[in-house]
Length: 253
Image (spheres, rainbow, N blue to C red):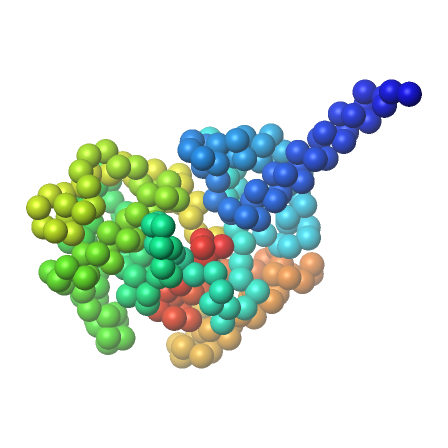
């Protein structure tokens, strides 16, 4: 006895929907081009169903456009250090605090920058931004004159390359680190904009003290888990982590 065609199609659709959801949970940022292209196409095909399911069951929003699919996951605990950003290398070493800070400064510089940027120019902007009195008061200082600091910036850039925020046009990061060359990148602005797992940033929090700001950010996270208020409360994952340990990332979560 053969199975009716309708049941076969329904079963296939359900299996594909589950596969798309698992792909997003494993990698919340899927690019239209590259190794995750097949998963991206599946997510885009079932975007409406996935968006509704994640919003209804987790409070997470799903954004899908022509370049990427981004599930805006938020951490259940700000103290959870089990999913750090890691080097885009075989070793996969977790990011240090300094690299997290450089990552945030680099993202800010890219957001204000042009469609193309050289690594040397990005480094100059990072140094300028790090000279902000508030950051200096927190003990943050970068000159990028030392090789170890340039290695940290190169690690940040390679993470952004892996996530599709940057595309290398010419050059090599090793040449920049050694001081013998530079690198040119295209900035993928849609992917950059979708990197933040947020609707609103901590700039909306009026508290002054660190502990109070962190407590209010945590309260917003808890609120989003509640069906009665999760639609009105949101948190910027990058900035939440920054408040917690100078800047931590989702994996991007």
